[in-house]
Amino acid sequence: MELLCVLGLLGALCVLYFGFQLIRFLRADADLTLLWAELFGHSPESKLSGNVVWVTGASSGIGEELSYQLAKLGSRLVLSARRENELLKVKQKCLEISNLEDKDILIVPLDLTNASTHEAATENVLKHFGQIDVLVNNGGRSQRSLCMETDLDVYRALLEVNYVGTVSLTKHVLHHMVQRKKGKVISISSVTGFIGVPLSSGYAASKHALQGFLNSLRVELGSYPDITISIVCPGPVQSKIVENAYTEKIEKSAPTTDQSSKMPTERCARLILITIANNLYETWIAEQPFLAICYLWQYTPTWAWWLTGKLGAQRIQNFKRGVDADSSYFTKKIK
Image (cartoon, rainbow, N blue to C red; front, side, top):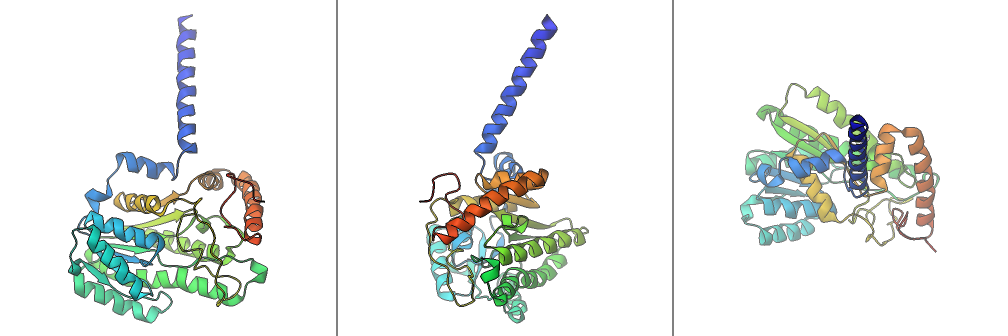
């Protein structure tokens, strides 16, 4: 009888434990390893203060928000993007919200597709700061168009900016990090870096390529344990990436759509900083149902194909009706 009571108690505890974990997962907005690091790992405040951090794509969206949060942490910043006037605005706000001085923030205008300028840009940063502790490869462009309607030039452009440009800049910065035998390279990929989705076939291809490069590079750098290669895979996040996305033709702009249903940029940036502080190799930053899909692709790909097909059809429907492709999956029915 006592044994039955003990077994019953253990069973009840197991049910409570798994119930708690299920609720935790349903409320999660990142993979469980990252959320564990947020609770019990190193804080960005303890690891990034005083570091020289180079952020590409810093003029808007995730890159802009990362710059503000890094400035508050006391990181010295290199801000890069194509639009120098927008970088000047970001720099000014960084100075206003932090204790940084003008010399602590360097603006380096950069076009990722112009690889011939990347060596000079790197030398400019090293001349100013003498070191690069962290490179955040955030610059890039997305896509909103169906494959059969999209010019081949769009696919070439996506590979040039998201893959080739990032590889080029990373190689130049790595020469410096290898000499110092330490450094961090963080590349902002996407959940489409390992999951194919409609309307983003070229974007997904460029991110798949980027992740293949970075995973291989990490192994090559095995003899440099203090050089960390991290991949961050966000799901839908509030930013201007949709507005700046390629469409069927290079010269055609994507329509502006409502982004309010997506993860706030501030939360995404904070989780990226936790990734950096804890030297995590790969992290997923996404709210449900996107986070669940990531886990399904990792552990049960047959189910993942089925669910991705269902959501993919909804994504195409959203797109054709002129609303944001990533919204309204479970929150409301599109009329």
